[in-house]
Image (cartoon, rainbow, N blue to C red; front, side):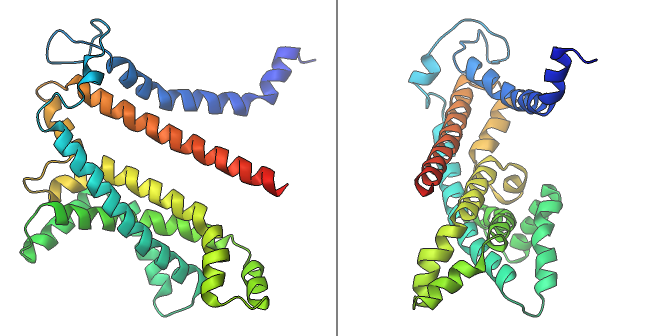
Length: 268
């Protein structure tokens, strides 16, 4: 006969495994948070010295760091907009229509996700060299948009394929125009998938180093700045920026859950 702790463990083993996995994923972020309040003795911020808020008071105290951060944010925003618009249209086309080359397009969409980033970065770099395009902001933006496009298509397509077509048919039966049906029925239903693809695109673009390094030229993004500074000693301000980005991401997820919960509560 099983004891009460064993029965409780068997009943909650999946929850415990999930909590342990989540804690393992969050632990590095907590370390970054803690060391953002550290004041190291030397150049390297790897051992705890004593508590200080100097880095939070002067987040741009390191030369060129905030410039590279601003550049990465601009690239992430522009790449997210481009990939979301193109990816949403592609997802609707693949999910709703039959056309020649549809199967090949579906296969090609998955290639950037399955392909190593070094291959894609080197291929795009070779393409820009052969076209005699100067490396810089625009080559990075094109590369990031191409890379993020597949993730948006997959997220939006999954959402579109799960939508009930009878809702759009009901709107048409009530004499709604195609534009009204799309704006008031289709787009709100597809919005969670579009938002998920956009957030994923922003994170991938802001975080990318490998593809960017092949197409940046003399342009330095924030990940490239962090990589270069790590060889000389990572400044504490890097931990501050990482903590701020983590907190913003958590707040966005929590806000999304709260809004979704309120909508579900209003419907019931």
